[in-house]
Image (cartoon, rainbow, N blue to C red; front, side):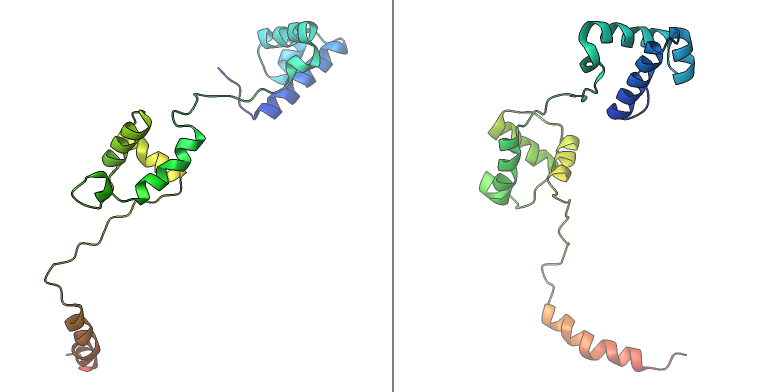
Length: 159
């Protein structure tokens, strides 16, 4: 199991341990003082002998390589800005399932719709749901009521 701490902190820990060894401390003593396993100290000592101080340096954790490269990530928002209708959907509403289909079609990379949401978040795109409004909605009548009807109700004394 990987010890806690940033790669730089762990590097400093290894260097401290090796320095103690060079000053004459035993492997067991170094392990006890630093709070690590006996085998870790032996690995540090052997690495120092084989590769020198360079072998004790911090190594970034690479992780899994991204499935979409930088160019593809830059292209995705441009594709989505065309709108869902341009891609043949019946409404202009983007869903994560639809976006996953576009990614599959354009980049030949398959994503689960839940991951598409995380991907969009990384691109600073937010989830937006259009307001549902009645087709019969009369904006002018609503404004008129706000100006006159609502004011009349507000001015009435309460019972």
